[in-house]
Figure 1 (cartoon, helix red, strand yellow):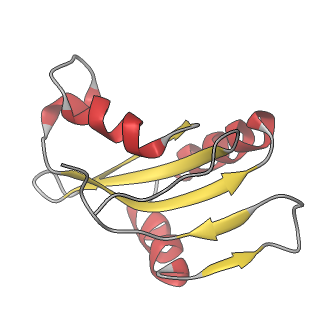
Figure 2 (cartoon, helix red, strand yellow):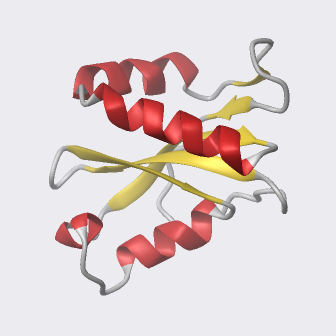
Length: 112
């Protein structure tokens, strides 16, 4: 099942690969398309596995806010803290009163 992501939105996403027991954090205007690229033949960290799934996304109105959040999450460098974020937001969609134009959306399906 594919997710519908609105155009002109910016996302921070977290991928998970069970084969590596590893997370990858990135940003994109289209997380589904970006996942397809991560799953294709390429060089880079995500080329190490072909079982990446989107486990978490955050939506932003501004690219600059998405990039700030991506940098923040990458700075955590703690798998348990990332897991806690994913579990806390699982299947929840709500406005974040702390930041205008942001909401949290959790997912967990692989794009084929």
